[in-house]
Picture 1: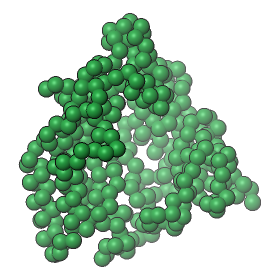
Picture 2 (picture 1 turned 120 degrees about the vertical axis):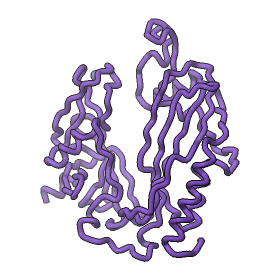
Picture 3 (picture 1 turned 90 degrees about the vertical axis):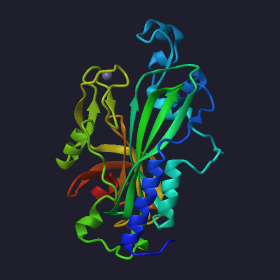
Picture 4 (picture 1 turned 135 degrees about the horizontal axis):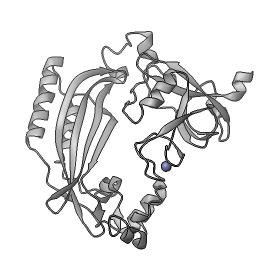
Length: 325
Ligand code: ZN
Protein backbone atom coordinates (compact mmCIF):
# COMPACT_ATOMS: atom_id res chain seq x y z
CA UNK A 1 0.00 0.00 0.00
CA UNK A 2 1.29 3.45 -0.84
CA UNK A 3 1.61 5.60 2.26
CA UNK A 4 0.96 9.29 2.62
CA UNK A 5 -1.50 11.70 4.07
CA UNK A 6 -5.13 11.40 3.07
CA UNK A 7 -4.70 14.46 0.88
CA UNK A 8 -1.66 12.96 -0.89
CA UNK A 9 -3.54 9.73 -1.48
CA UNK A 10 -6.56 11.53 -2.93
CA UNK A 11 -4.28 13.58 -5.20
CA UNK A 12 -2.52 10.43 -6.42
CA UNK A 13 -5.83 8.74 -7.13
CA UNK A 14 -7.12 11.75 -9.03
CA UNK A 15 -3.88 11.91 -11.05
CA UNK A 16 -4.20 8.22 -11.93
CA UNK A 17 -7.83 8.74 -12.94
CA UNK A 18 -6.90 11.69 -15.12
CA UNK A 19 -4.21 9.72 -16.88
CA UNK A 20 -6.44 6.70 -17.50
CA UNK A 21 -9.40 8.83 -18.61
CA UNK A 22 -7.06 10.87 -20.81
CA UNK A 23 -6.03 7.74 -22.70
CA UNK A 24 -9.62 7.57 -23.96
CA UNK A 25 -11.24 4.50 -25.41
CA UNK A 26 -9.50 1.16 -25.08
CA UNK A 27 -8.67 -0.91 -28.13
CA UNK A 28 -11.78 -2.80 -29.28
CA UNK A 29 -12.16 -6.33 -27.98
CA UNK A 30 -13.87 -8.53 -30.55
CA UNK A 31 -16.80 -10.79 -29.72
CA UNK A 32 -16.02 -14.50 -29.67
CA UNK A 33 -19.03 -15.28 -31.88
CA UNK A 34 -21.35 -13.33 -34.13
CA UNK A 35 -24.92 -12.64 -33.01
CA UNK A 36 -26.55 -16.05 -33.27
CA UNK A 37 -29.82 -17.86 -32.67
CA UNK A 38 -28.58 -20.63 -30.31
CA UNK A 39 -27.29 -18.06 -27.82
CA UNK A 40 -30.51 -16.06 -28.17
CA UNK A 41 -32.60 -19.21 -27.56
CA UNK A 42 -30.73 -19.88 -24.32
CA UNK A 43 -30.98 -16.27 -23.16
CA UNK A 44 -34.69 -15.74 -23.82
CA UNK A 45 -35.45 -19.05 -22.14
CA UNK A 46 -33.45 -18.10 -19.03
CA UNK A 47 -35.07 -14.65 -18.91
CA UNK A 48 -38.56 -15.87 -19.75
CA UNK A 49 -38.86 -13.55 -22.75
CA UNK A 50 -41.33 -15.09 -25.19
CA UNK A 51 -41.27 -12.34 -27.84
CA UNK A 52 -41.33 -14.32 -31.12
CA UNK A 53 -39.31 -11.71 -33.09
CA UNK A 54 -36.26 -13.23 -31.40
CA UNK A 55 -36.87 -16.88 -32.17
CA UNK A 56 -39.53 -17.40 -34.86
CA UNK A 57 -38.40 -16.55 -38.40
CA UNK A 58 -42.00 -16.47 -39.55
CA UNK A 59 -43.24 -14.12 -36.81
CA UNK A 60 -40.14 -11.95 -37.21
CA UNK A 61 -40.67 -11.67 -40.97
CA UNK A 62 -44.20 -10.40 -40.37
CA UNK A 63 -43.06 -7.89 -37.69
CA UNK A 64 -41.74 -4.33 -38.09
CA UNK A 65 -38.24 -5.86 -38.10
CA UNK A 66 -38.88 -7.88 -41.25
CA UNK A 67 -36.66 -10.66 -39.88
CA UNK A 68 -35.09 -12.12 -36.74
CA UNK A 69 -33.40 -9.69 -34.37
CA UNK A 70 -31.53 -10.07 -31.09
CA UNK A 71 -32.86 -8.81 -27.75
CA UNK A 72 -31.17 -5.41 -27.25
CA UNK A 73 -30.40 -6.25 -23.61
CA UNK A 74 -28.08 -9.02 -24.87
CA UNK A 75 -25.50 -6.42 -26.00
CA UNK A 76 -23.04 -7.36 -23.28
CA UNK A 77 -23.59 -11.08 -23.83
CA UNK A 78 -21.95 -10.98 -27.26
CA UNK A 79 -18.63 -9.74 -25.95
CA UNK A 80 -18.38 -11.79 -22.76
CA UNK A 81 -14.73 -12.84 -22.68
CA UNK A 82 -15.31 -16.41 -21.48
CA UNK A 83 -13.75 -18.17 -18.52
CA UNK A 84 -10.16 -17.45 -19.50
CA UNK A 85 -10.18 -13.92 -20.84
CA UNK A 86 -7.08 -12.80 -22.74
CA UNK A 87 -5.96 -10.24 -20.15
CA UNK A 88 -3.99 -7.40 -21.66
CA UNK A 89 -4.02 -5.48 -18.35
CA UNK A 90 -4.73 -2.25 -20.19
CA UNK A 91 -8.50 -2.13 -19.74
CA UNK A 92 -9.32 1.29 -18.19
CA UNK A 93 -11.61 -0.23 -15.55
CA UNK A 94 -8.95 -2.68 -14.40
CA UNK A 95 -6.24 -0.02 -14.46
CA UNK A 96 -8.36 2.20 -12.20
CA UNK A 97 -9.23 -0.72 -9.91
CA UNK A 98 -5.52 -1.50 -9.57
CA UNK A 99 -4.73 2.14 -8.74
CA UNK A 100 -7.35 2.11 -5.97
CA UNK A 101 -6.13 -1.28 -4.70
CA UNK A 102 -2.67 0.20 -4.28
CA UNK A 103 -4.11 2.83 -1.91
CA UNK A 104 -6.05 0.35 0.21
CA UNK A 105 -9.44 0.65 -1.45
CA UNK A 106 -9.58 -3.07 -2.03
CA UNK A 107 -13.29 -3.94 -1.94
CA UNK A 108 -15.77 -3.45 -4.71
CA UNK A 109 -19.53 -3.35 -5.05
CA UNK A 110 -21.45 -2.56 -8.22
CA UNK A 111 -23.94 0.24 -7.67
CA UNK A 112 -25.66 0.94 -10.95
CA UNK A 113 -25.70 0.22 -14.63
CA UNK A 114 -27.39 2.13 -17.43
CA UNK A 115 -27.62 0.72 -20.94
CA UNK A 116 -28.59 2.51 -24.15
CA UNK A 117 -29.47 0.62 -27.31
CA UNK A 118 -29.18 2.47 -30.62
CA UNK A 119 -30.77 -0.23 -32.74
CA UNK A 120 -31.68 -3.91 -32.91
CA UNK A 121 -28.95 -6.33 -33.94
CA UNK A 122 -29.27 -8.93 -36.68
CA UNK A 123 -27.89 -12.44 -36.75
CA UNK A 124 -24.36 -12.59 -38.12
CA UNK A 125 -23.22 -9.19 -36.89
CA UNK A 126 -19.96 -9.52 -34.99
CA UNK A 127 -19.56 -6.88 -32.31
CA UNK A 128 -16.54 -5.36 -30.64
CA UNK A 129 -16.53 -3.50 -27.35
CA UNK A 130 -14.41 -0.66 -26.03
CA UNK A 131 -14.10 0.77 -22.53
CA UNK A 132 -13.18 4.21 -21.34
CA UNK A 133 -12.99 5.70 -17.88
CA UNK A 134 -15.82 8.20 -17.52
CA UNK A 135 -15.31 9.55 -14.00
CA UNK A 136 -13.80 8.84 -10.59
CA UNK A 137 -15.47 10.65 -7.70
CA UNK A 138 -14.36 10.60 -4.10
CA UNK A 139 -13.36 10.04 -1.47
CA UNK A 140 -16.91 9.47 -0.22
CA UNK A 141 -17.90 8.21 3.19
CA UNK A 142 -20.46 5.42 2.84
CA UNK A 143 -21.91 2.90 5.25
CA UNK A 144 -19.59 0.31 3.71
CA UNK A 145 -16.53 2.45 4.30
CA UNK A 146 -14.68 5.26 2.56
CA UNK A 147 -14.55 4.83 -1.17
CA UNK A 148 -14.49 6.13 -4.70
CA UNK A 149 -17.25 5.87 -7.30
CA UNK A 150 -15.73 4.70 -10.57
CA UNK A 151 -17.81 5.03 -13.72
CA UNK A 152 -16.82 3.45 -17.00
CA UNK A 153 -18.51 3.64 -20.37
CA UNK A 154 -18.61 0.65 -22.70
CA UNK A 155 -19.48 1.12 -26.35
CA UNK A 156 -20.43 -1.81 -28.57
CA UNK A 157 -19.68 -1.44 -32.28
CA UNK A 158 -20.85 -3.28 -35.34
CA UNK A 159 -18.16 -2.31 -37.80
CA UNK A 160 -17.64 1.39 -37.16
CA UNK A 161 -21.20 1.96 -35.98
CA UNK A 162 -21.92 2.28 -32.24
CA UNK A 163 -24.94 0.07 -31.53
CA UNK A 164 -25.15 0.08 -27.71
CA UNK A 165 -23.58 1.78 -24.71
CA UNK A 166 -23.34 1.11 -21.01
CA UNK A 167 -22.47 3.33 -18.07
CA UNK A 168 -21.31 1.09 -15.25
CA UNK A 169 -20.59 2.41 -11.76
CA UNK A 170 -18.85 0.66 -8.92
CA UNK A 171 -17.96 1.77 -5.42
CA UNK A 172 -14.36 0.84 -4.69
CA UNK A 173 -14.02 1.06 -0.95
CA UNK A 174 -11.93 0.42 2.13
CA UNK A 175 -14.15 -1.69 4.40
CA UNK A 176 -15.22 0.27 7.46
CA UNK A 177 -13.68 -2.32 9.85
CA UNK A 178 -10.25 -1.76 8.39
CA UNK A 179 -10.49 2.03 8.37
CA UNK A 180 -9.10 4.32 11.02
CA UNK A 181 -12.34 6.18 11.65
CA UNK A 182 -14.90 3.51 11.12
CA UNK A 183 -17.34 3.96 13.97
CA UNK A 184 -20.83 4.65 12.72
CA UNK A 185 -21.90 8.19 13.55
CA UNK A 186 -25.37 7.39 14.82
CA UNK A 187 -27.97 4.74 15.40
CA UNK A 188 -29.72 5.78 12.22
CA UNK A 189 -26.56 5.15 10.22
CA UNK A 190 -26.33 1.73 11.82
CA UNK A 191 -29.85 0.88 10.82
CA UNK A 192 -29.57 2.23 7.29
CA UNK A 193 -29.02 -0.23 4.46
CA UNK A 194 -25.39 -0.21 3.38
CA UNK A 195 -26.31 0.75 -0.18
CA UNK A 196 -29.52 2.64 -0.75
CA UNK A 197 -31.70 1.42 -3.60
CA UNK A 198 -31.88 3.63 -6.67
CA UNK A 199 -35.32 5.22 -6.91
CA UNK A 200 -36.44 6.16 -10.41
CA UNK A 201 -39.62 6.75 -12.38
CA UNK A 202 -40.21 2.99 -12.68
CA UNK A 203 -39.69 2.17 -9.01
CA UNK A 204 -40.97 5.28 -7.15
CA UNK A 205 -44.43 3.72 -6.58
CA UNK A 206 -42.80 0.74 -4.85
CA UNK A 207 -40.81 2.87 -2.39
CA UNK A 208 -43.78 5.20 -1.78
CA UNK A 209 -45.65 2.02 -0.92
CA UNK A 210 -43.10 0.72 1.57
CA UNK A 211 -42.99 4.16 3.22
CA UNK A 212 -46.75 3.80 3.69
CA UNK A 213 -46.40 0.22 4.96
CA UNK A 214 -47.63 -1.33 1.72
CA UNK A 215 -46.01 -3.89 -0.53
CA UNK A 216 -46.93 -2.78 -4.04
CA UNK A 217 -46.61 -5.05 -7.05
CA UNK A 218 -46.54 -3.63 -10.55
CA UNK A 219 -49.49 -4.67 -12.70
CA UNK A 220 -49.67 -4.15 -16.46
CA UNK A 221 -52.33 -1.60 -17.40
CA UNK A 222 -52.90 -3.52 -20.63
CA UNK A 223 -53.07 -7.23 -19.85
CA UNK A 224 -52.99 -7.21 -16.04
CA UNK A 225 -49.76 -9.23 -15.73
CA UNK A 226 -48.07 -8.82 -12.34
CA UNK A 227 -44.33 -8.26 -12.41
CA UNK A 228 -41.45 -7.61 -10.06
CA UNK A 229 -38.95 -5.96 -10.12
CA UNK A 230 -40.77 -3.04 -11.73
CA UNK A 231 -39.95 -1.95 -15.25
CA UNK A 232 -41.21 0.46 -17.89
CA UNK A 233 -42.77 -2.06 -20.25
CA UNK A 234 -44.86 -5.22 -19.99
CA UNK A 235 -42.84 -8.21 -21.23
CA UNK A 236 -46.10 -9.90 -22.23
CA UNK A 237 -48.05 -7.29 -24.22
CA UNK A 238 -45.62 -4.34 -24.51
CA UNK A 239 -47.93 -1.89 -22.74
CA UNK A 240 -46.16 1.04 -21.07
CA UNK A 241 -48.87 2.20 -18.66
CA UNK A 242 -48.31 0.15 -15.50
CA UNK A 243 -50.58 0.24 -12.48
CA UNK A 244 -50.09 -1.70 -9.24
CA UNK A 245 -51.88 -3.74 -6.64
CA UNK A 246 -51.19 -3.82 -2.93
CA UNK A 247 -49.99 -7.27 -1.93
CA UNK A 248 -51.28 -8.88 1.23
CA UNK A 249 -47.60 -9.21 2.10
CA UNK A 250 -47.79 -12.96 2.62
CA UNK A 251 -45.80 -15.60 0.84
CA UNK A 252 -43.35 -18.42 1.21
CA UNK A 253 -39.60 -18.80 0.99
CA UNK A 254 -38.76 -19.84 -2.57
CA UNK A 255 -34.98 -19.78 -2.03
CA UNK A 256 -32.56 -18.24 0.43
CA UNK A 257 -28.93 -17.73 1.37
CA UNK A 258 -27.33 -17.46 4.79
CA UNK A 259 -24.69 -14.73 4.72
CA UNK A 260 -21.72 -15.45 7.03
CA UNK A 261 -18.98 -13.33 5.47
CA UNK A 262 -17.83 -10.64 4.71
CA UNK A 263 -18.94 -8.43 7.62
CA UNK A 264 -21.55 -5.77 6.87
CA UNK A 265 -21.58 -2.53 8.86
CA UNK A 266 -24.50 -2.43 11.28
CA UNK A 267 -25.41 -6.09 10.70
CA UNK A 268 -25.04 -9.06 12.97
CA UNK A 269 -24.03 -12.17 11.07
CA UNK A 270 -25.15 -14.61 9.96
CA UNK A 271 -28.16 -13.07 8.27
CA UNK A 272 -30.67 -14.59 5.90
CA UNK A 273 -31.65 -13.14 2.52
CA UNK A 274 -34.78 -14.79 1.19
CA UNK A 275 -36.38 -14.84 -2.23
CA UNK A 276 -40.07 -15.00 -1.35
CA UNK A 277 -42.86 -16.04 -3.67
CA UNK A 278 -45.79 -13.85 -2.71
CA UNK A 279 -49.26 -15.35 -2.71
CA UNK A 280 -50.03 -13.02 -5.64
CA UNK A 281 -47.42 -14.95 -7.66
CA UNK A 282 -44.35 -12.69 -8.01
CA UNK A 283 -41.02 -13.20 -6.25
CA UNK A 284 -39.31 -10.57 -4.15
CA UNK A 285 -35.98 -10.43 -2.27
CA UNK A 286 -35.52 -9.27 1.29
CA UNK A 287 -33.80 -9.94 4.57
CA UNK A 288 -35.55 -12.56 6.70
CA UNK A 289 -35.60 -11.36 10.31
CA UNK A 290 -36.59 -13.18 13.46
CA UNK A 291 -35.67 -16.63 12.21
CA UNK A 292 -32.86 -18.97 13.27
CA UNK A 293 -30.82 -19.38 10.04
CA UNK A 294 -30.62 -23.13 10.71
CA UNK A 295 -34.41 -23.33 10.81
CA UNK A 296 -35.12 -21.49 7.56
CA UNK A 297 -36.50 -23.73 4.84
CA UNK A 298 -38.01 -23.51 1.40
CA UNK A 299 -41.77 -23.21 1.73
CA UNK A 300 -41.61 -21.38 5.07
CA UNK A 301 -44.51 -18.92 5.41
CA UNK A 302 -43.45 -15.31 5.85
CA UNK A 303 -45.02 -11.88 6.09
CA UNK A 304 -43.61 -8.54 4.93
CA UNK A 305 -42.53 -5.95 7.49
CA UNK A 306 -41.14 -2.43 7.19
CA UNK A 307 -38.30 -0.59 8.86
CA UNK A 308 -38.56 3.10 8.20
CA UNK A 309 -35.15 4.60 7.42
CA UNK A 310 -34.28 8.24 7.00
CA UNK A 311 -34.29 8.05 3.21
CA UNK A 312 -36.00 4.83 2.26
CA UNK A 313 -38.12 2.10 3.83
CA UNK A 314 -36.73 -1.29 2.91
CA UNK A 315 -39.18 -4.17 3.37
CA UNK A 316 -38.13 -7.39 5.09
CA UNK A 317 -39.68 -10.73 5.95
CA UNK A 318 -40.62 -12.37 9.23
CA UNK A 319 -41.79 -15.93 9.80
CA UNK A 320 -45.56 -16.11 10.18
CA UNK A 321 -45.21 -18.67 13.03
CA UNK A 322 -43.09 -16.25 15.04
CA UNK A 323 -45.88 -13.65 14.98
CA UNK A 324 -48.41 -16.09 16.36
CA UNK A 325 -46.10 -17.19 19.16
ZN1 ZN B 1 -49.26 -6.49 -20.38
